[in-house]
Length: 122
Image 1 (cartoon, rainbow, N blue to C red):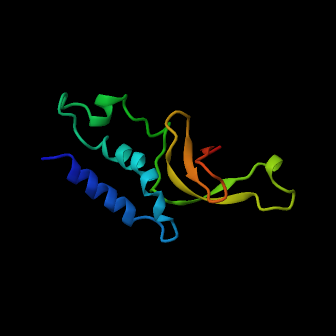
Image 2: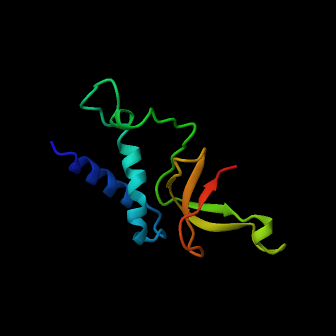
Image 3: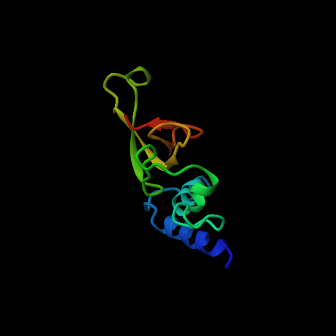
């Protein structure tokens, strides 16, 4: 069996679960999240005691890298240095996936900002 149908079904399910206001042009930014959430579930063909993710990387630690549903609406704290004193303290964004290089940080899409900032949950 080809690995494409399970991934395709997993990706379609993730896209169908997006918030209705989440822009669909972000679908390509959600691919790493789809791969990351599927590979720990797939068994490795080399070592049956490991997952496919563990075979390629290390064991996935959900405490260091919490996952959320793709496209979830998030409020991103706007630091006092970058906003006016009476301005709102948060900016709307969309959760794209974890920032694997950082501890408990996330990649978030914010419409007002070009690019994808890495945000800490603290």
